[in-house]
Length: 411
Image 1 (cartoon, rainbow, N blue to C red):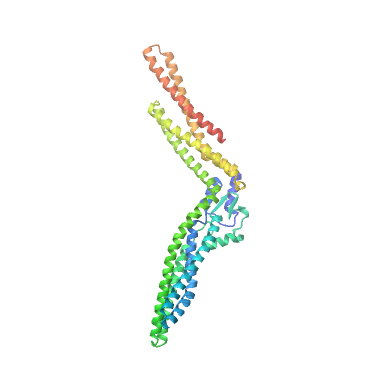
Image 2 (tube, rainbow, N blue to C red; image 1 turned 180 degrees about the vertical axis):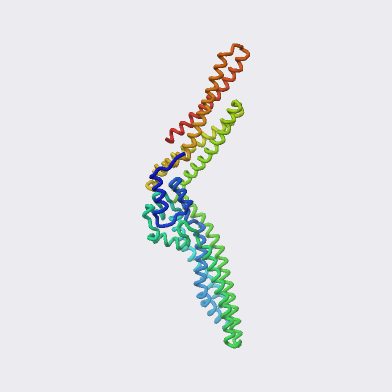
């Protein structure tokens, strides 16, 4: 098995110790394994959640101001018995509130989407970090000195590599808004009590107007929550399309890494199955049905090997042609490829060579028996047996040559 060099061990220690923020163990292990990790930091759902949270925050801040602007003029108009003007004023003011929230949501969506496009992913290697589309040396990067990243962490309530707290804040704002609404109901009833219950008409009017306002406020809230949900889904779809374009290069690189991981697991699985089949073939004198199974598995192995080689070539080309080239350590990458692809192929090659020797020895043994046999009736079964063994040798050699070609390409 492949053993890490001392240089790599030192780099591993640097990654774990010499930085200004905490990298989770699973990410460290991934980097130590292949020196590369793509972390999804700010995503479309985070943008949507932050807009919903701020929506509640603005309701909390503005609802008292809107209440005063709505209730006092409405009360005056109602007491003046100018119902027409009262209705016109109420509808007009409600439209103003809607317009204000549309404007707020639009501005929030535009700003948050801009942040998303730059900070959806964080790329980390054994020596560098790419964040906010800037590449920094990992051991020299102090996140506490990066004001933009700190503001993003605060805005989305999600520090790098940690969980988001937006949902908790949303629940807190919702509770505060509900508490404030009920507190003002209590205040209106206290007015009645302070005036010895002689101002019951004023209290009833205030209660009616405040209830209408509270209902309209919650109507706005629930209508705009639907709008936020609908708008958020549209925004998420748009953002995903933009992210696919903006981050195509790095997501493509990450996809190639994942594909190589998949091919590697398949090769190991197929190698183990092939070992079982070859052992059974030796025990059962290479029955024809076993050879068919063996050929099928060898074809699968060659296909996965071919895909691995092509993916490896594409991956190297994409890295070399990207702005992230300086972040990658190809000596570690080559070691990773050896562990993932080359080592299983070499083990399969060794396994086939071993069985090829067994078949060659069997062929020689049959040839010796043919020479020693004088009876024609006994000789022809031996000749037929030799022919079958030769066919198996040809099949094994054909697959072995292909695998050795892949091995040479990886060395």
